[in-house]
Image 1 (cartoon, one colour):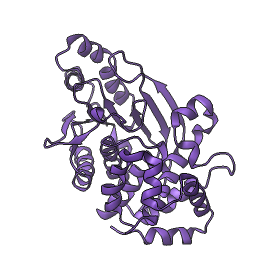
Image 2 (cartoon, one colour):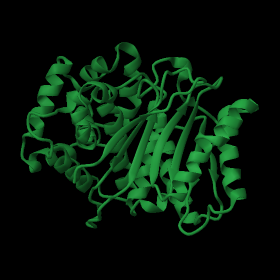
Image 3 (cartoon, one colour):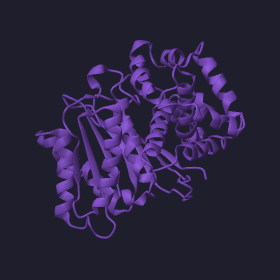
Image 4 (spheres, one colour):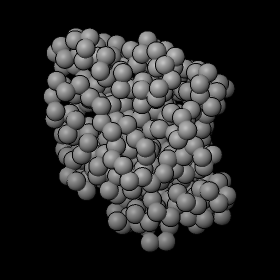
Length: 352
């Protein structure tokens, strides 16, 4: 089923970035481990003008502090435990990047009907963003903070990274609204996926397909390592989604810059899930397969630092052994045309 997708601009005079873009889509997918479940949830990815920070002063860095968790305590603790487990698994694998605040806000029955509970959440949210700047905190309480509670009360299910770059040190926020709306075991991988975006914020910019594809690939890979989902079945499902794109209408290269699609080719937004996430995950797998050693761990440790040397095109070519980025795109397109079993042989050659 084709996902819905929309972009909203949320301009703030306090941000160093000119705008924040909100990517909304409804994802329908198979839940793995031989359990097929229709996935119907709203996922958000909020980012600045670049999906991954270009200026080193605006990047995430390795920190000693633990993530700060803010949640309504009367919301069932199991949702908190599942998300924290996925985030911690990824922190252990990629490193502890931050500073990071995680907001888990939910209402299964009437947990958010108390104004006192709602106020506690949005006050923490706004003060983490604005400190002691009273005017900004006051504005946040009325708008961005209040919106979190309204969306939760309205039944929205969301998972997204928001990057606050107007502080002396930038802050990453992972926001999960009504996570009980995500089917299990898929919810485990949302914590992984969103934390990968925090990690990516420590490095130079990548195209949309590499940003989302990298997060989705690692969500599948680490989810499988902890017996939450099946890696091969997840990759098969992603390939099926990628191949639903009408031939000749769009390819991976069209999703280098999703904001450009919004401005110049909005009719392609319907393929955001198919190409940025699903084909993107396979593109990352292809780069790893073509690399020396074919190691997922080496990819996270060696590929991302290369982004600062000459940019993502050079990193893809150097790490994957491609003559140039056009060769990469052509060979990846050829891979998509291969029988599924041959593609799965590639997946099975990937090493830890």
